[in-house]
Every structure is written in C-alpha cells, then in structure tokens.
Length: 184
Length: 271
Picture 1: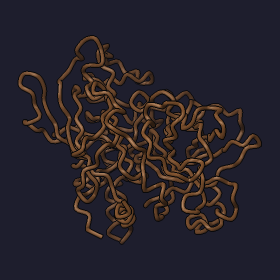
Picture 2: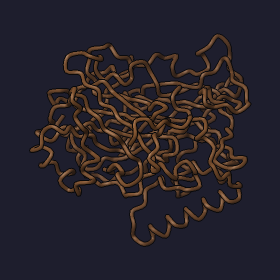
Picture 3: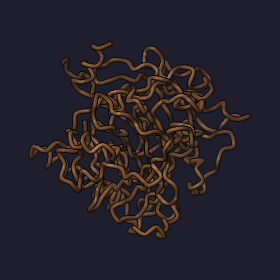
C-alpha cells in the first residue's frame, strides 16, 4: 500500500448556527414515511450532565433491507421512492433526532447496523459511531467490534426495538453511559 | 430519565456561565496545547482536533471522555452517499445571486480541490457551506447580536466537485462574529464547510479562515486544533488568479479528507 502524501484537513465544530446551511426538505426521510417496511429510528442526544442537546446533528448511512449498499443519487432531492441510504436529522429543542428508514439487511453476513455521525455545537469534531439492530443475537455475538467490548459499552451501540417495531437509540456524548465512538 | 424533563431554551445555553476574560482564555489555550504536546511526547496518540478543550466552554459537557475505539471499517463505512452534477443547481454555488439585489460586502471566489490522502481528486462529492454576512451576522434565528441582517444574503451554498475534484463558490467575505464563550469573544471570519468523501469515514465538517486574521490566537474554536501546522491548513490562500477585475477577490483552499487505510485500495481493485 502506498504512503499517504497529504496531511488531512482537520475537523472543526459544526457550530451553533448550522441549520440554515445543512437542512433540506425531507432530509430525515431515508424512505417515505409509513411506506411498507418503513420504521422510525429515533432517540435523544445527551450531554455529560444528562441534559438533552438541542443543537446537535445526526447523520446515518446504511445498506437497504437486502444488505445492498445503494449507489443511487437522490439523498439531497428526495423523490420519495429511491433508497439512497443517507439521512440527516437536527435535534429538536428536546434533543430528539429521528429518521424514517428501513432495517438494514446484513452486509457480507455481518451484524447489520447504521453507520452514524454526531455533530453538535460545543463538540469540536465529528464523532463516528454505529447503531446496531438488536434482533439477531447470533450475528451480534459474532461482531468483531461488539464482542471486543464489555457489556455496558456494547449496550451503547445496540438500538432497542419498540413494541410497534421501531428503533429507539439514545446517544450520550459524555458520562456514565457514554456512547462508544469510533476511529478508523 | 424522566420524560417530563424539558430542555433549556437553546438561546440560554449560548453564554458560558463563568464569562472569563480573554487573558484567562488565552492562557488556558496555551496550557491545553502544552498538555497535549506532553501527552504526545509520552507516546500517546493525540488527535489533530482536541475534543476535550475547556477554553471552548460549551465543549466541557459535550466531549467524550474515553478515547475513540479503533476499528476496521465495515463495507458500508467504505462507501458514501452518491451525488452527481445534477443534484445541485449552478446558482446554489453563487451566494450573491440568491436574492433580488446585491449583498453588501467584499465579493470573492473561493475555489479549491477535494483530494484524498494520496492526492487523488474526488469527483462528484457534495460540498455545503454556510457563513455569516459581511457584518458578522448569521441568518439563524438564534443569532441575535445587533449587527444588521442583509436582505440580499442568506449565506448558504452547495456545490458538487467536478471531474478534477474542483469546487467553486462565489460569495462575500464574512465578518468576524461575536459570541458568548467569554467576555468580548470574537470568532475570526470563517466559512463553515461540510464535505463528503468517497467513504463515510472521510466525512468532514470544518471551517475555512482568511489569511492574517488578528483573532487567530484568541479564538478557542480555531485552537481546538492543537498544532500550528494543522491550523494553517484551514486558512485559504489569497490567489490573484482567482480575482475578477473590478469585481471580486479570490481565495484558494484545497481540502484533504483522511484515509481510510488499506481496505480502500482493496476495494478499488475490485472494480
């Protein structure tokens, strides 16, 4: 493998006033709401004092229900039916983010998850994490990342299935149940 | 967690409770950089951007305390959303043409290339920018400092990189922006950039600055990047070739997205 020749551009905070720069219509609707197979993935982003963060931004990127990584354009201008895999949600005043999406299928036979990135005012750089589906215990047990973590850290990466089939997943930037964040 | 807990009004969170002086903040910046240097000298891997950076007061409760977990990217993380030239209209990259009249301020072109760590141009990637107007005021409703809004300037734009990885925006130079991190805190003039790469791991949100800004040494956000040589890469370069006679100034700013390592080359060989 060749050596890197350029130094990367450092990241900075998304700042306080990003909404007018990054928002676009239906940005959190990875699939059309209530369409067959559609679920809500939602949760609260918390700070180290346990307070919700009203100025955070969450992005997800995942395979489709069959585990296929979409190469379709259209994440920016939704046509209401093309699955592009990408969504963006700014938190509400109560720190709540949510997406309409589908349960991603397993890619390469691995435990399915949403790749996720969190940004916030006060957070100096992006944070990568994963939001795993809770359903397939066997795949979860075989996952290299999850199986390397103690149970309390593993729990921060696995969403909760709600009785109506949706997914709930809180993200904690700091504190006792701090979400596990990733470097590649 | 009780569901009845209500969030504080976001505006009320913008002012740091202690309101330190600039001298105190500047001393904290220096001390935090020295601590990071010492950690690195002791053999620790220290990131370019320090997320634990107390002089940036709102970071205190919003940064992870554990080191990020180093993982091999999975397949999905080695791809990123697909964009193309037609996803963005040409006018979206000209922030001076979005209203019926001309915005106030110094017109300029900001142009550059999006590259990966190996110097390869990244075509068809989405770049989003947002910024304050020439008086340093954001159009965002929570920005309430008493500088004028400009009815002819929103301050948001988008572009898709061309086959050479080039992007180009026409805009006006943003003004310095006062904030409430400490007493008499001012951000150096900057443009926010959001950049997609060809892998989700390369995703980058950052800020571009302008050469010679006297506020650099005073600004906790700019200084969350601990080394001078890394901070320098956030500063656009004045480029006379990008100016337009009797019309606009020009700055060149190349963006380099990071990694990922081996797997990326393996993937490309499959195609």
